[in-house]
Length: 386
Image (cartoon, rainbow, N blue to C red; front, side, top):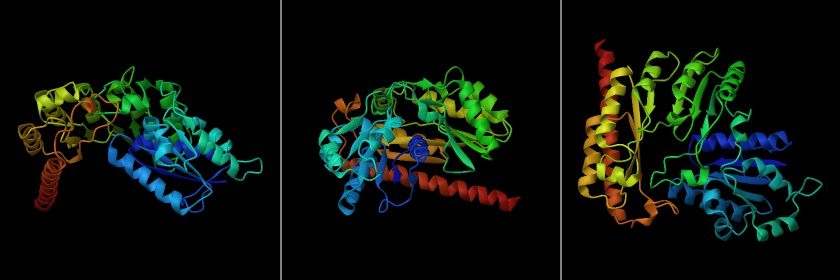
């Protein structure tokens, strides 16, 4: 049978999709690039932002109208968050599988496949009515972190941990991916050594907050730096409250670690940062990136920013705008706030009007584009002078 998998969301979702693909291939299924010819259509979904969640549901609904008699399944964060509600939104859905249970996907699909390997259409209808669901054990084992299948033979994502303990007030991740669980260092090193032997030289370490890897993230970087065959090391994502000078020195001292730091700001206003439960102030953030730039030569600094958080005033927004002007990030991913059910921020009134969010969003995007243009000009000018 043929399986089509589409990923919505971040690099962690992409790694999960690799694991899912590997599971099915080990069972003799064929991985294909087109939903039209597939017997099984799976969407690996993100629920961190409402737009990605709605886009996945909309795309799935469109496919269901086009192609009938297939097994359609939603997996990942949106599946974990919405659970049975997805069957109400998508009546032709066959199964829903959350982030902690994706190892069960072949088992769930096999319930809908008959003994000859074809679709058991009668059972599929019964499955839809009974709402086949696997969304409970988000704090359980994490076998997907050890999958051998890789889509790319030059670069690879390696998950070093799962979940998050920060509970930022706007973020649903702790509720859909569970609490922090770090992998043992020997498992990570053995996986990367195996990748190196396969000719994969570019490694990106993944974690919702890699700085909180236990027992020691800086030590882990040092051990990976020793592995033969690995030439480039990157990591995503760092939380400002846990980033420190030791990390910056490790980046600077290594000839393999990319001189890049993604350090989400989210807001330049102390009042909004407190409401977001971010654990740092504007001053602390500025001091931190000052230290990073002093230590790491040629640092490429990127960030995330949210506009329109509940109660955000013009003064709060200007604090963010001015910080961006002063800091001049290499890249900024800027998002309009959308409430996520179950989070603390969802209890607050979403009181910043949509048109105001849109205006502020555009102002920051335009500023970032201008900063990017200036950096390119300055770089080009320096090359010309040399």
